[in-house]
Length: 297
Length: 330
Image (tube, rainbow over all chains, first blue to last red; front, side, top):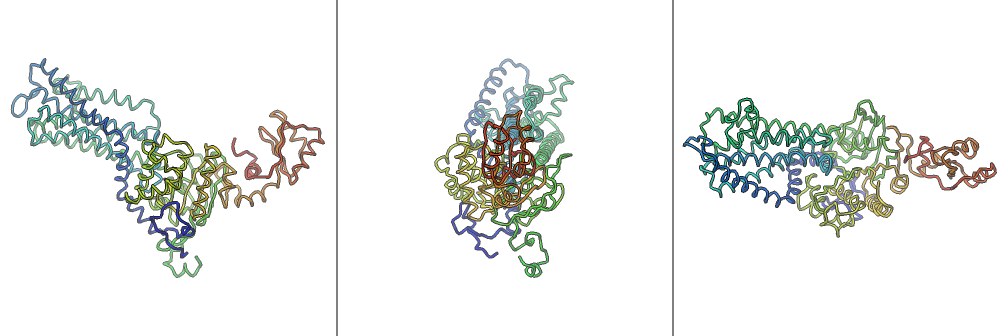
């Protein structure tokens, strides 16, 4: 067994020298496996981000266009009909467009989260099948899930940054020192919503319309009844629980606090943060578990 | 390795070489390997030993347990019971390490349809921990190997089935594996595409790569495999080189007679005893004999007139038929 060790870089179609090369030792293989155990999530993210690149321009155009349209139509158009103050900030009444903008940013990020955590995940298992291709490599299903989550996060961040840029241009961020935290609030909301969606999607064997139902029957009501367009207190009491459990409401309120301040007590702000982080963390844990269950047969 | 070397080692005489340091001598070793899914037993106690450099074929009909065996070897499916070592490691314990040492060509097309031909190779190399520069360099070499240089910038969905298959093989080679697992590598390809693919696989074999393939095509097994196990219903029915299997299990020649679906069974009864053995299939009667022409003469003397008749050399297809009483492709 003293065959010449091949040049490792001499891949695949080797020259005639490769006729009888030594097999790798257990240690060599374990070292290679260990490297991938460390970096595998990142490799998966790198791969999926590469495919996202093809969508860059459509994401860019939609990511800029949608906030511009909403802020024009709602903030400037609809706002002219609204006489009462939408909200009270720590420094007095807040104009409607300032009240609305952080919630719309959170909505945009949650929607991006939904888009990246639903059909692309379904596709990885069912249509594009690339998750199964990765499964044959040293990466494990947990890392594939994490890679998909990182990719979704990149897309969410892109939408958050674009939306915030439009807010700045429209001049609807009163407090520039903390205003950028609106994006962080949006991201937390996106994770809290998107990662559980990813976990659920990974358990679906077939797409019989469940994801569309999820969009229409969960996302849309959440969008309408989470204090996005008017304070949650303005909705009937029996509808308010939708807001309490909704990541969108908490993300919107945190975004408003970052943009123009809040009269909420500190514990409530902490509770909102804790709720979003917990939901996102639980979602990631469940998603990784769902990937393992799906792939380890 | 010999006994002395084992004794002199660190006291871990693993089945295919020891646990660390020295290279293993058996690529795959399985003993009483079993895989059950609920009540269904897909693999029912298989023993395998594959030395390095061998081209080894698992031959059997759909559902014989070939793919389940491959998945266990590939470290993506846990065995229910039995022993299994791949490159000296237990895939259930050292999954990532085992997968690092293998190249896998799955039965389904799992190429990333949203990436170009070239990016499919580059991206895949990263999963084995290769640097980006290494991936770029190897991708170019493998594009040449797979005859895909001219389509390197094309999206995967734009290329033909044969090209996709070659790309899948190139992708499996990005980590320069010693062992290539191929699950039905040419299913669904036209003859020209198959020949080109076989040629590539043959080159790999010449270069010392261990090939482990499943197929239900006999000609493929005959072309590529040094050794074959015939599997049916999760069990090994026979084992040997293609020539050996034919010699041991069937006669030199085979006569195929077609009398039409409704007459085959009756005719078979009338010529019972002719040749070594008579088998009835749905569409034909098959007679194993050392002298095929003599069988035809006998049939003619009996006053039987087949719609078509054919005398040919026995093949692995016949081995399977003989062992199981069934045709491979049904």
